[in-house]
Amino acid sequence: MPSTSTSPSPSSLTRLERPLAALLIALYFALYSLLSLLRHATYHSFGFDLGLYDQVFWNTVHGRWWESTMSLGLPQPHSYFGDHFSPIFFAILPVYALFPHPQTLLVVQTALIALGAVPIYLLARATFPDTGQPLLWVAAYLLFLPVAHINLYDFHETALAILPLGLALHFLERKQTVWFLLSLGAAALVKEEMALVGIGFGLYVTLARGSWRLGLLLVVASLASFLTILYAAIPAFNGGRGFAYFQSRYGQLGASPLQILGNALTRPRLLFQTLIQPRKAAFVAALLGPVLGLPAASGWGILLLLPTLGYLLLSRYEPQFSFTSQYSAPLVPLVLGTAILGLARVPVRLRTLVSAAVLLSSLAFSYAYGNLPFDRRFDPREFLPEARYTAFAPALAKIPAQASVAAENDLTPHLDQRQRVYGIEYEGLADADYVALDMAATSHDPAAFGAQLESVRGQGYEVIATQPGLALLRRIAP
Image 1 (cartoon, rainbow, N blue to C red):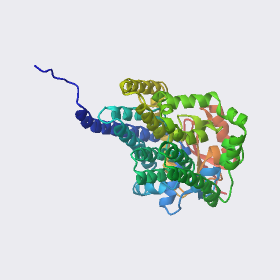
Image 2: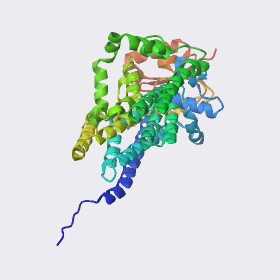
Image 3: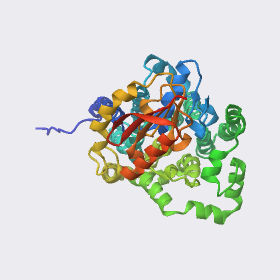
Image 4: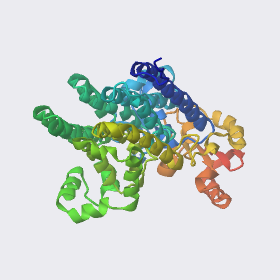
């Protein structure tokens, strides 16, 4: 009598993969939408950057296109595009116009991050059909260290690059050139440095695919786009304020993008000193460790990572080489995508073992350093209300809509829907009509908070509401 097998057939695996992958993605979206909303509702979100972006979108739907008083450290109305060039915001604007709240930005970001697993699934499915691998890579994506950290760190435009970059790699591997170019173009609209990612794609197309014409065109177009945005588009919006952003983060290499590039190419010792640092090595290890360094086995695929790693590791601004910040977002689809390409070069007899090791490694890294609810460093306190904020909220709600407000970082996202709002950390009081203080900004030091309160009062303000460690002041009328 023939024996029967209880193991699923390849076709049944394929049938199960799609609903299970969709379920994982949907569960992630539901959970992280809830966590993002709770984090904001309990005053754990920040003015930089949720409050900043909410003001920019709110001003736009009120006819003041992309206007901010919080970016550039400039406490007067100006265009956000003079700080960073993000035309992708036009795609989000219709949703925000229907639901003009900071919570909208948080949910939209979570949806796009969750959907970033889709191209990873599609790439794995095309590379390893009927194997169960696609579901594993969806899990690896959702466990990947930067993903949850980015999701729970307010709203940032860089997170919007995850989905289009993943799609670009998928369509490139499927040889669907038009969709590849459209996806890469969408990613370039996210922020100015996304154009640099296109250089990596151009080199990969040239060397791995042998498409010299398309590859060189991508390299030239990407570099030209990057320089045009930096030297023409952004200065047109900021009145020619120069490259202060680059000087603060890359000043050790030069005062402008071209100087930075020149010194990086001609001064190897300076380049070595900039790149070889323990924190930067740990950053790279945190990105490649969960996927067992498989991108290094992807052949020319490693070129896809180099532009993003380059501009992150050349910086002296620590958040740029931290997997807990938004700056690593472009690497999420590129690391996982090239890991899949690397696994495809592993002998078939070893792939199941390596895949299992990837899943275990992803779980281990996530538990040790991630921001999922089961992770060791996950902090439930970020989602719990504090009585003092609950009692203080009615006072904040009474601030007139037309009044200008200066507030501490965790209060700004609840006060930003007005034409003039300032973050005390960067813009100071800026002659605001109202000032909202929080002892959390002084590391919960009562003496420092008391000194700050007296300083503000000495500048012509009176206290109109208090709670423990909180104070709302109004400018005394002449």
